[in-house]
Image 1 (cartoon, rainbow, N blue to C red):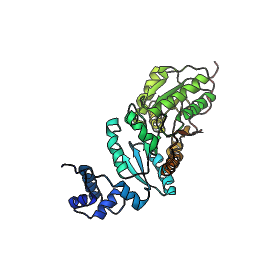
Image 2: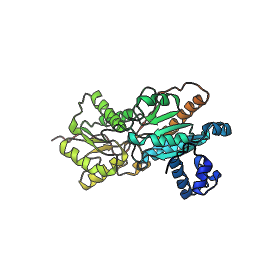
Image 3: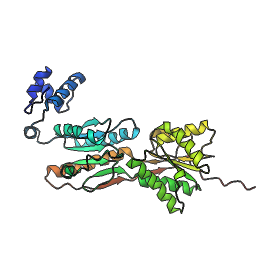
Image 4: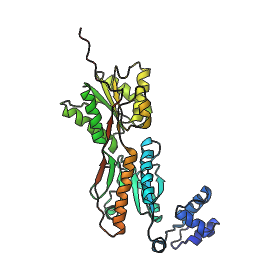
Amino acid sequence: MRKSYRCTIKDIASRAGVSAQTVSRVINNSPNVSIETRQRIQKLIHELGYQPNLVARNLVKQSSMNVGVMVSSLEYIGPHLFLTGIERQAVEYGYSLILTILDDPIPENLEEPVRMLLAHQVSGIIWVVPEYGNNYAWWRKPGQAEFLANFPIVFMNARPVPGTSVVSPDDRHGAYLVTRHLLEQGYRQIGIITGPSDGWEANQRLAGWRDALLEKGISPQENQVAVGNWKAECGEPCLKKLLKDYPEMDALFVSSDQMALGVLSAAFRLGIHIPEDLAIAGFDDFPETAYYTPPLTTVRRKHIETGKLAMRELHRKIQAYKAGKPLEHGSVYMQPELIIRNSTPPKTPAEKH
């Protein structure tokens, strides 16, 4: 279908067989529109190239109270909790959220969803897409610098870059805290299971583990590291790799609680007693970790609080934007908390013969 540059709401309503008011509800993300009708109208908006008259809408509404939130996956628990915090804080400020899920957040797939959010006249955007490989390359094109500098947007779990605002848990410090705890408990042969090697979060946790070992005068070695994928299913192959490559291991830092669950299950099947044979610590402090067997020492990442912090930071930028003031950028980190449970008791000295 040929796109119409001057497409109006009435054009879309006529083609969709609905009223202009119904089309307006869809554009403004209002309720009381069936899923089927909403999808039909959204498809026509895209096909016809409709762009809202932002000037007219501003005259009517004065300002938008919509905030765009972009996530790459709801497969993991962390993004759910971030969104919970964002939504709770947004409600306090009177904002409504427009949620977009990116199934494959590669650079080529970013422009269209951003354009659609801007077409909804969002006041700002929170980008809850972890940085992997080059998936942020589109944002870091030279042509994007002006947009990033002049429009309210907050990134979460991304590498800090000048001219952008990032809100994130301090994963490096959290990994340092839990590794230092293992060292203080008497363990010296500490392995690690990381997340994907091209991920910003995974590399921050790996760096924190290294920081603690080096502080104690221990040089980390490659055979102490196994690379996972954040899922419980990788626990067994990663544990087997470390047992083969690093048999002297007496403690293990697993970079997510979901992977730690897989490790505990695999250890049971392999006849490894936790924590008598191997102390284990995780990362995230999801609610279930207190009920693992044994209850898991972990790092409380404060997902909900971090989500609230991101929304507060975005609100600050939105207020400056509306007032015509320059936007201030920078990184804000939520400090983690070490949660000590039964999986990391003090190491028992070997019996003397």
